[in-house]
Amino acid sequence: MERAASVNADPVHLPDRNGYCTQRRNWTGFWLLGLCNNFAYVVMLSAAHDILKHQESGNTTASTSATLALDFQGGNSSNSSRYDCNPVSTAAVLLADILPTLIIKLSAPFVIHKLPYGFRVLFCAVMAATSFLLVSFSSAVWMSILGVIFASISAGLGELSFLSLTVFFSRDVLGGWGSGTGGAGVAGALAYSGLTQAGLSPQITLLIMLVVPFAMLISYFLLLVPPLSLPQWKIRETEYAAVDSDERRQLMDGSEEEEQEKSTQEDRPLGPLTFTEKLHIIKGLLGFVFPLGLVYFAEYFINQGMMELLYFPNFFLSHAEQYRWYQTLYQVGVFVSRSSLCCVKIRKLWALSALQVVNAVLLLFAVRYQFLPNAWLVFTIVLYEGLLGGAAYVNTFYFISKETEDRQREFAMAAASVGDSLGIALAGLAAFPVHRYFCSL
Image (cartoon, rainbow, N blue to C red; front, side, top):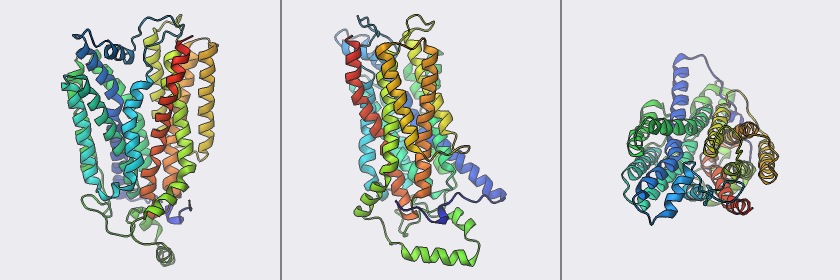
C-alpha cells in the first residue's frame, strides 16, 4: 500500500481555543461511541444465560440449556477430570456471538458506503436496544439467542462504521475510540455484576441498560462536531471528501503547499472506488490484518480454551472466582493498552503477534503439565495478554489511518476491522478439540 502524502502526517495542533474545544469534544464523543458500541456485546452473553437459567428453572426436560447457563455463570458440573471441566466449552457461545459480526465485517465494507452515517448509527442503536428488550422479555430460548445475535450485529456494524467515521476527524480520535472500546469490557462487566449483585433481577438490569443505545445517539448527534464533508443523511458526491479537512487547512498555509496539493489531487483517480481498487486495497492491508488476526486468535484461544482449565484447587478463590478474575484482569489490560495511543505508538505489529503466540503456547503447556505454582502468576500473564491485544488493535488502525491515501482510507478502515473477528472465530473453533482433549484426561 502506498504511503500517504505529507498531508497525512500527525496533525499540527494550533493554539486555538475553539479548535481545542472541538478536538476535545470529538475525542470524548468517540470515547463514548466506543463504550456504547461494545457495551451490549460485552454484557449480552452473561445476561442472556442468566435469563436462560430462569426460563429453564421450571422445565426439567431442558437440562442441556440449564447446564450451559450454569457454565457461563461460573458454575461447574461434577466430573472425573482433574481440570474440573464444564460439559460444554465456553467457546460454544463465543462462536454464536462472533459469527454475525464476522459475516457483517466480511461483506459490509463493499456496500456500506451507500448508507450514510446517520442511518447507520440509528440502525446500530435500534439493534442494541432491541437486543436488551428481547433478552429481558424473552419467554423462550430462541428469543434470548436472537437477542445475542442482535447485539452482535450492532457491535459489528458499529465497529466498522465508526472506524470509517474517524477519517473525517483528526487522527487523535482513534485514541478515544480505542480507549472507549477497552473501557466497555470493564464497565459492562462491572455494571451488570454490580446491579444484579445489588438485588436487581437480570430483566430489570437489562431494561436499565437501555440508556446505553440512547447515549450512543447523543454522542453522535449532539457531542461530535462533524465536518461539512461528512455524509450524514445522503451519499457523498464529492471525489474523496473523507480527508482530514482541519488538518489540511492547518498544513496548507502557504501558496507553495497549496500548489503541491492541487498537483497531487490532479494525479489521483476521481470518483468512488471500483471493485478492483478495493481488492487492491485489501491486498495492501494484509500486512495489518494478519498480525491483528493472529493476536486475537492467540488471546481468545487462551480466553476460551485455556482459562477455564487453569484451575488451582488449593487457592483461596473458587474455580468460578478464579475464572471471573482471569476475565476481569484481561479486560483491564485491554482498557489500559487501548488508552495508550497518546503515550506510545508501536509500528512492529508482528512483534505483538509473536509475543501473544508465546503466551498461548506457554499456557497450553501449563495446562498440560500443570507447572505453574499458583493463580497469581496466571493473573499476571492474563493482564499482560490483555495489554498486548489492546495495543495491537489500537496501533493497527492508527497506522492504517496514517499510511493510507485519502481516497482509500475510509474503505481501508472498514475492511481491516475483520481481522480481530476472524481471529476470534478461528480461536473458538480451535478451542473445542483442546477442551475435549484435556477434559478426557
